[in-house]
Length: 141
Ligand code: CMP
Image (cartoon, rainbow, N blue to C red):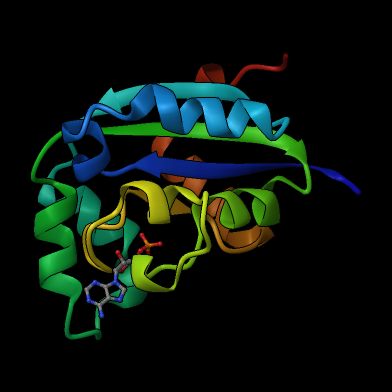
């Protein structure tokens, strides 16, 4: 399988619950390396731009309000099949449907406050990484 990069966000609820380390440990235990990382508080405009694909959805406003309600941790994860692997580790979007042991089953409280985001495909991963990280913030390890 090819080595891929994917964007991961620990959302404001994950940061507030103080589980950054537990989430990172799950990535590392599954052979994903962090090749970029920073904590930021998104502006409303950054959240709206990042989630522009969901603009027409009824939950768009709520999603953007939530995403800029507190600091988030942005990371690039790298590894074999990293995009699918990260999605497996995260679990289903709605924590009620997430498999045991996944991040969302362990830590998320609702579909809106679902603790993590991960890119859903190679094109999205490229766009999402470039949305948050400049070339000199990405490392080869
Ligand atoms: P994420 O993987 O970040 O991608 C889009 C986000 O929209 C998703 O996780 C959820 O947090 C959010 N979302 C999806 N469906 C709903 C919904 N029905 N109500 C509120 N938020 C939603």
